[in-house]
Image (tube, rainbow, N blue to C red; front, side):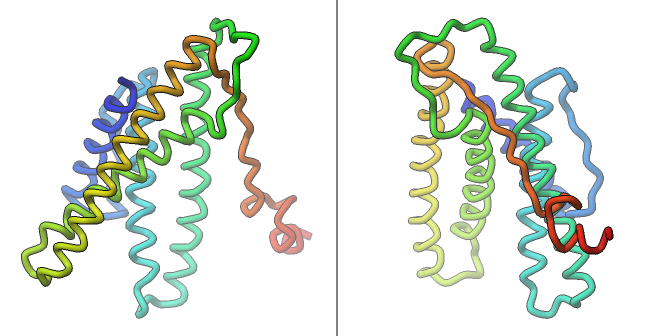
Length: 201
């Protein structure tokens, strides 16, 4: 199933990141560029780095200048994340381009890649909640609460994985069809963000 394949790659990326656990470490993709695994690995790496950006920027003692630099990195990361999702959807569009949709075929609320995006984030939640549930320096109450949350996350992973695989099966069978919209983010665009537009003039 595709969800199992994707989740394995997400876990691989997360484990690799945490060897150094450094947002500034060099990125290296172990998969060939023409392989969907290449996109999935890159997608999760972006998510993993941004997860830790978000931790760092919440430091109450962070210097304002450093916080501003980090906010710019988060904005750029969000754009990269969106781009990767669209690349992954392009893969599915190409894969299923010859499928003839049935007359009663329906559209899904989200594209396959945006569902896979949620699975990537969920893999990060599972990893970090498992860390908390296994802490030896935390209270018994903390460990218990985190284990309960981890159990819910694992159930969510099971449900989301099933939903992704069912969606792809339905698309392949012509029961559902893909319709992809570009995200059209406005905050990084000099023509669409009124603050950036004003500075440009």
